[in-house]
Image 1 (tube, rainbow, N blue to C red):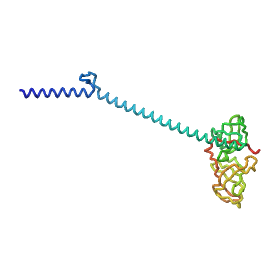
Image 2: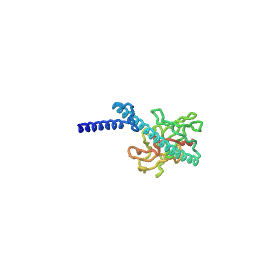
Image 3: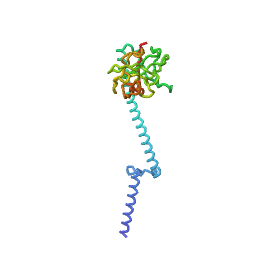
Image 4: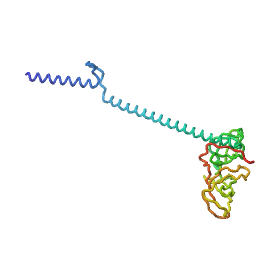
Length: 253
C-alpha cells in the first residue's frame, strides 16, 4: 500500500512539473504565477514566420534601391567632374584661339535620316552663322548648316555631303576628305605616284576658303591603288558617337 501511494505521489509530481515546464516554455508563467494568456496556435506561428520573411525581403529590396541610387549618384558626380575638365580645356583653347565664337553642348542627334547631323544648344544669339566649322579638342567635327536664335544643326564630317580640303602632314600632299555615311571617311584625288602610308595624319589645308589651316581631321587606315587615284580610307580623330561639347570657330569666308 505504501509503495502504491509513493508511486502515485511521484507520478503526480512529474505531471505537475511537466505542466509547469510546458507553460513556462510558452511564456505563460511569470515569477511563479501562471499567466492565463491564450496559447499561440501553430497556424498563427506559421503566419508570423512568413510575415517576418516578407518584411525582411521588403527591407532588403529597399536597401538594394538605396545602394543603386548611391551608385548612380556617384556616377553622376564623376560625370560632372569629367565634363568640368572638358569645358576647362575648351575654355583654355578659346583663350588661346581668338577665332572661337562660342562653346556649345550637344543636345541630340539630327532627325533627318538622309543626313548625319547633331544639334547644339546655341545659335544666332551667340554669334553662330551657317558655314562655321565645329571642332573638339580631338579634331574636326563638321560645319554649321542651320541656325535659329538659340539652336544650331551641324553636318558631321562623316556625312557623304561633307568635304574639306586637307594636307598630309608627313608629305604635304593635298587632297579632299569626304564622308562616306559610315564611321570612316575617304581621302580623294591623291595621284597614284604620291607617297601615302597607313598612319599618315591629315590636317585641314585652308585652301577651301572655309576651314582654317591646321585642324586635325583623321588618320589613314587603308590604301588601295585602282584607277587614276588612290583609294584611301580615313579614321576621323573625333568619333561621331563621342561628341559632347563643340567649339564653333569662324570660317575663312
